Image (cartoon, rainbow, N blue to C red; front, side, top):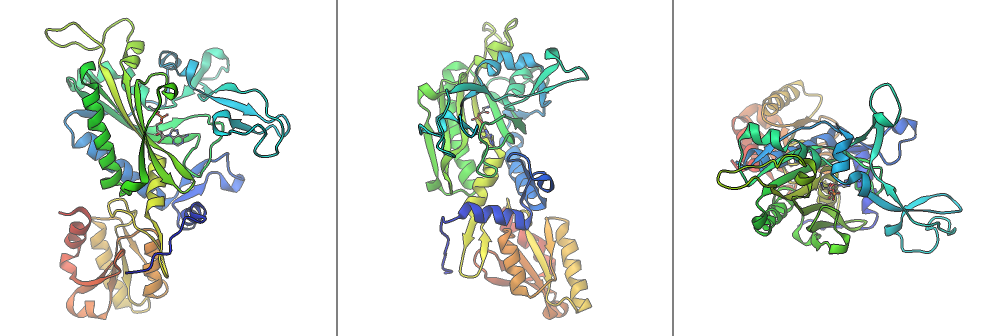
Length: 434
Ligand code: GAP
């Protein structure tokens, strides 16, 4: 057993530094001094994020008969946000320091004075989080539009179109993955709270009488996603039954799934019973759901919602380990940016390099593969451990003789000899179990 020397000291700093050093996440617009907590996903970060999104889509849309997907416009008719209640109620309490003029969320500070300069704080007022812009060449009040603050509303607005084209009957869901924008008062904690982020949401339409049963179903689905797919530790996840005084304007019951981030226990995902609030508000003139033998009615909604960026952050925090000599990201293999890395033992032996390239090209048909011929093998292993590559394959002089390579496992560091002809299946079996 390797001694784990992981500790929570400066864990966020270490993760942010690893993300930058290895190309997971960079500060957005960095060469211009950045922009208010915006972040760009680099070559490895985009792979990790895409893997999460693809696994989610597969599990919750493609593998199910009762959920279909959409990909709607980011900017919707402003009437959508009037009907949804966002224009009137989607706000946070804002408080400003009279001295340094810094702004804070009043519900996030329980001090009488400014946490920055100790100056006197002003009165709290509501600040709407909708991000505005103008559509078209004229910048007047009639051309004001909003970037969507959640993906959810398109699933309600498109409800009838989806129903008619997919011929689904209750219960069924509509899913979407996409960007959302909120003019957050205090973005922060790296990619945890930003003004531009991604969501993966399902609006699951039901008959009212079934809401508790369906709520439990999605609660289990979300637990299984976090533990079995993302590999988060059960003990790091907590469920908060949101008190009725703090429920969003549309919700009758919400559970927040909280995760033990290095900066504290914070919301990762949510599960809400939205009643028929949304469909009732969008379809005022026509009840949108009909079934034979009953009067048309408004379906009720259970909404499991998942933040993509918070998923990435939780996965990185959970996977980061410091051992005696190495930093290792113990990512679930399905999430890892590279599934396998190939090394020729020596860079200056053309026959080894040629054979390694052949192995690399063959693996590339099935996986994301890295190739590295720099430095010594030990350094190359550590370099791949740091980005979570589950398997490293070394081509040495024996390979030229017997067509066997050495496969080294990231977590155990054990090595095994495998025939080149069996390599792709071996890795596939290890990663996907088939
Ligand atoms: N449609 C329901 C809804 O949007 P929410 O709790 O406001 O509910 C859902 O947001 C999820 O979106 C959160 O649980 C979180 O994962 C993510 N999220 C919300 N605001 C965010 C922000 N400013 N930055 C990053 N992720 C955010």
